Image (cartoon, rainbow, N blue to C red; front, side, top):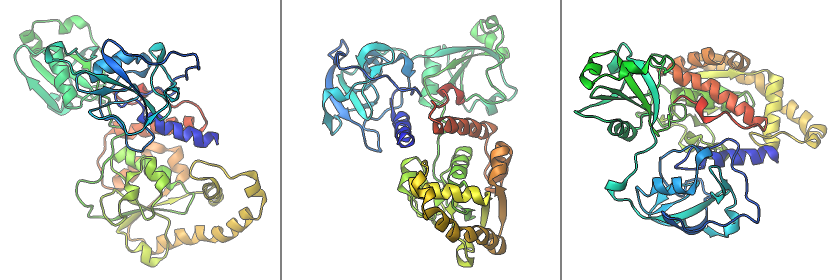
Length: 439
């Protein structure tokens, strides 16, 4: 039950604060004596509403540090666009469909004690008035320091704006609109970028080198760097292929061999969804959006399959064949059959006839699966699960190359971060802080 509950909470955290960054610990619940939300100088409290669906009730993309979240911060951000704001929310011109009792919004705002910021699957909603342009406040921008320009500015900085008297506010606003986490000023030149190995923000220089007049600074080799409110999503963004794949690739394994984990790694390394020969609603709800796509659509980078037999194998042009220790594969698949993807079989399952019967029916399939793919597969990359765990990035780099996708080292590095984060959560610990993800 705890593992299942933790999984639900992780999904909720990912959906928390459409406008605000999450906190892996989650907010503490308020006691029954806690004060209820009230009208404020910026907005009027409307009520507590349900947010239990898969789609977020309120939309938006402004991020704040959850640890500093207050009702006023939320309202100020949403006041730039009408009409409702909600701690653990975004903004919308219409109220959410389902209202609930006020006692169900019982989580304390992290930055404002004794005030209410929604609850588990619940929104505290306020109605706010739109600000006039003259009164709009400058978004939070963090000065990162003065840095030497990279050798190839055009390559390192994907977007730019050049205009007289460009300000920090103008530059950061431009880069925020373009969805970049960094705004870079060099004289009257504004550049937008992501942190990269060539521009990693680790070697700041004396700030006085950036303190010259704009024209002099433009000729110099230094720039001022600011962090915008935009969250770097390079490790998390995934999409379908822009055009249909010419090569139909299988990700084949015996059940319990780590296929779902391999899909997770491939998706985060390449940025493209993986498909499936089957449909698993649980996996779809956990973010594997390729699960619902028809497996022959060719819109996914590869397709999960446990099938064997000549006809099923020859439908694919190539395959990554994932092989795992047969005993551990059988144990993993038995756990999944009895308790789902994240669960464990109960003692009664292991002590009954279920386990020996399962082994008797599945053991021979482990060998026939591998032998069939070796016999009928047209082009194979054999990956051992144990080697993928032991040497993650080099093995993943080989898999990505086989898929004919070019990815950055930063994106591959995300695999380490995501693997550790998931391991912590699987052991009922809080996941890694958001700042571990590249920004």
